[in-house]
Length: 448
Image (cartoon, rainbow, N blue to C red):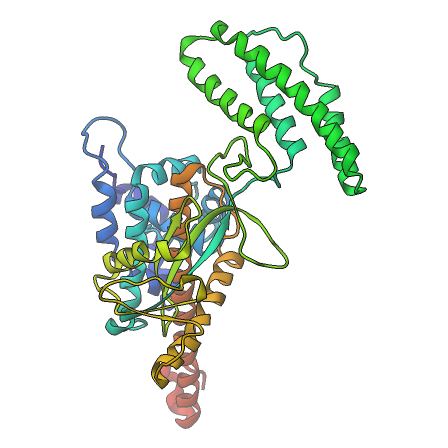
């Protein structure tokens, strides 16, 4: 069933409207006026075509919670609980009267993300770009020149060591057997955890021969449990056999993979995780997915963001990035500034400027020098936003989380700009009050 809207009778039970109690110059209230909520309603409402069942939540409420979550780096539970305590958040999500209960269960945000998909979160990013234009913070010609770079979005997994992966595999197999009444000859509940811990101690002491011997013993124990569960797979119910077969396949990969294999499994619950090296001294390897980021050259506003599974070469991602920017901004960029990792890539109709490029004009040299402005933008998305750790599941979760991190960065930039405008207005008003006579200050809201 389509989204529901609050009735006036229910709203009037809460007293005076919020706009009579709040500061209408607050950045969140001003930002709510800049956002085109009708475009979000149109996109989200298209997922509800049936007239039966419980009415859906208002699209503005869900979109507003997703915006606030990525703007202020909140979890699903925290953003819902803070919404009850903060009337400005309630006004931003479309409430007219003060609410004293949680608007939704936090798990509803998970289901909404799956429902709207990548198209829905791209709409949320597009709306922030339009809000920047409407507020005069982004010129129409700004999207002609963009900066493109890639980064790694780490997944919410533990550091993948062989001993930890083997012990997790054994625990999942034993739990599968216990839940379905399968009797195992040996489950190694006492020996295997001690072996995994001992392997970590040997690694810390740099006693690598003992560590390898311990891991080999642990791999033997896990292999015995895996083969026994495989033999007794027919005892499981028919509806649970595919799930068990998938688990056995992942455990088999962990048992057989070598140190330098290319397609290693780094997390039992997240097979899409990749090991990516970005050449950093502090973090030589990061475990997650590659993300491409596109910002405007002058303002630094995010106009494109997408996850790139498979760890492709940076040059192969540029075409898809330009296509996404063209869709979100309705303008195809004419100039793209990149780093040396994109050396050799060419795209028809687009001028590509690369760091270290020779034989350039003074204007081109200035634009190439400006390329490094995307680095602090990525840093802010990781420190102030949620790009540093992705808790969502699967490849779809990677795609949704990456786009929403870009939308959250744009929201923070818009709020910061609105705060500066409000502060400048206050300083200008103080200067005016100092010039006029004290008898006239009461007419301007001052104190005589």
